Amino acid sequence: MNAILKSAKNVVFDIGCVLLTFEPETYLPLTVSAELAEKLDWHLLYDSPMWVALDGGTVTEEEVARDTARRFGDESVWPQIMPAIQRFPEFMRPMPACELIPQLHAQGKKVFALSNYGLEPFARTEKRFSALFSQMDGMVISGRERVSKPDAAIYQLLCSRYGLTPAECVFIDDRPVNVEAARRVGMQGILYTGIESLL
Image (cartoon, rainbow, N blue to C red; front, side, top):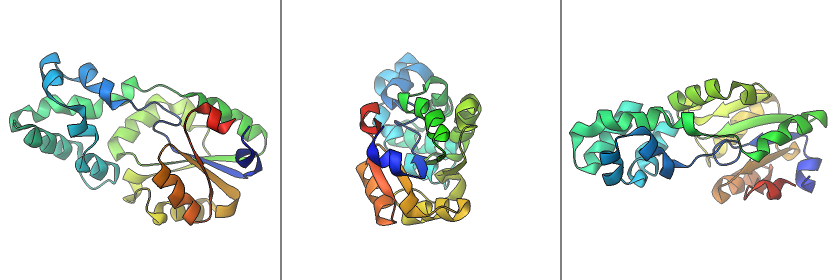
């Protein structure tokens, strides 16, 4: 196990692309009609300011669908886009890092999730992967809190809510900007590039 991970008292995981797969390029063909999937670039939906706003809890799923349809050039297709927003958790899969959680607990560590995730999408994800999330000692989800990584406030919220000392925490994320933000508030950080980065 990674030396930083071994030394930490508290382990804080991002969710998408660390604990669960997030492969948006595959979701459109699985959730919308073949005709729409052929024409609609997945970046227009999943890589948009409105998707970030959904993660931040400031817009609804319908608002995201309507905005995507408008930018697509046909506002009438927004109901056809909704399944791409609502159904993607059905196609997510656990990643190898999930298998480390029981080991971390066995070593006396506490395990937390800190993730940018829309309120309604996370509710569906939490229900589907209840066995995974039941292992967490606590979670901070951006859509619930209306603050997102890399804002220092979301890391500080995690620590204050659960009585954690930043220096005793290691934060694991697949995005360098989020890892650097954790380090700035005093946490250790690991950039997740695959399970080997934790071993």
